[in-house]
Length: 348
Image 1 (cartoon, rainbow, N blue to C red):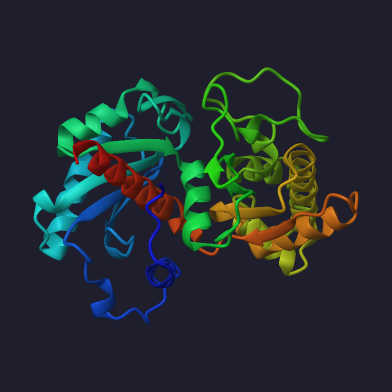
Image 2 (image 1 turned 45 degrees about the vertical axis):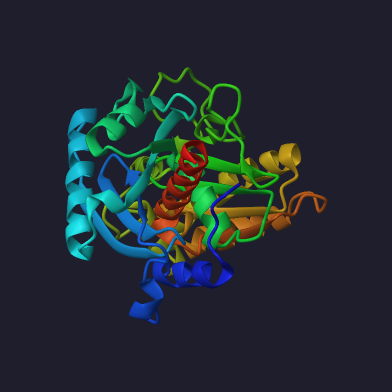
């Protein structure tokens, strides 16, 4: 049984993750004096949140992970972050029930092992659950970060109440969290949703080394978009600089810059093809775009326009994440609450 918060508490949590300042301090009081920690482990940032057993966030902490590839070093940072959260809130360590963590990579949820991540971390077969439990002395659980993004959106975000939907995380890379009948679908080898390797019209069909960006990522992932811009950029064609991020390119496209519009339309068409194909297979009524690139309104609007020109039988609703960068943290908290609930049943 999933440890979802009450409707009232879920609303409070949604306000917090959306940056609302309306939450009152009394709304943050823990219902039973017990807490969980959610963790989002990325190749550039590490983010933690402390929440009560209703899922209401009390404090957050973050640090940079650029250039850090050693899993032991990441675990040490997580331990330091937990210490900081407890210090901020004057909560004793004995009040912690569990920790849930999301990792940008293929993760064996049952074994608690990170099978493979992108080049940013470069992990292979890391027993992260055992490492966290040893470092913190509390039960731990893991999942792919995009899967947790889907869980967060279903809990307190744009997919709240939806039993079947797909969360598309588009940032540096591309991944999908697939929710079917109210549960995350992991697949046979824990790699369901690795759509960055999907072949659609316009992508390059070539052998991809393990851990390297896939064909779809090379066109609509943040780094891929930058490379496309570099390839098209000519000083006689545009006054814009050659070194732009994906979201900056989209911003200029909205402003009418023609070369930037070429990139935006190419991304929208490619993304629409991917969504169309997934829709044909899963028949999901909702797709939620997340990640720094995926949440850009211009990409969402352009992709929606392309989809409208496709088969009218396949017209899923397309929405932007309402939790933003906190979708994965919200999902990690939900995972930690589930873990605490299971542990409670085992020990009772």
